[in-house]
Length: 318
Picture 1 (spheres, helix red, strand yellow):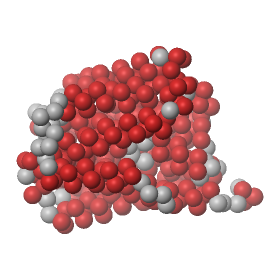
Picture 2 (spheres, one colour):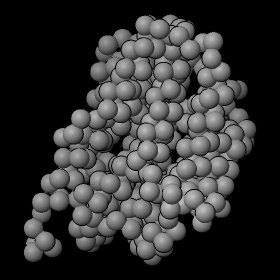
Picture 3 (tube, one colour):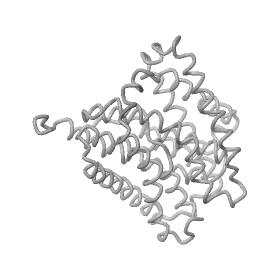
């Protein structure tokens, strides 16, 4: 298990937000994060290799299972936890769990883990890439079922903002890929640091707003433990469920690995970006980031162990 500086940075950002919530209040943080979000997806467009997508395109059965798991089975699984919240679907804590459930899959970590586990890499690349695009429509659509009645959730306006800040830069990156694609892929590690820096800044500003408003003062230790327990159950519940479906569909070991890893992953990058676009500077943003941050840490730790276990398997038994 390697030391993960990004996870440490997230904890430091939350601590700084607690002790120094107004430290960056004189700076144009909103503009900086908006530009940062656009650049994240512009660079993603530059790095997206069409050749790799084509290799995984024809594995339709695996694609369907992964996308159904991400955008249907996972959200539905969060419904099981509605009774444990006093306000039901109107509870911000449950909505935080539901927000986690409707997010798209990760891109880089899904592909890396599948590669380590010697799974079906082209299929992983294809699904990790299209998941973020599908999520631009399905994530706010799912949220609208429970939040549109509040009057603060305008689905079409949110979709417009997501297209403006995510799709437009992504398309621009794809257009310019023929000129700068090789450079972007060659400097993928450095661009990854930029992505993480933007996410840490979003986390800091989000939690600063929440701490300033006193929102977290209403959340008890029991609530945090409850969210943590739910996150653990969601991960292992989805991992086991996808494994059973793969067995039922007679998937080979490589497709099973890919389906399990891609179908259980949730993207902190998309979560941070979407919560910023959808909820803006609302005090509730910190609450909505809580579940996805806990899940992100869990999925990295657990899937790393699973990937290493799969890597050491005996190919003669396949």
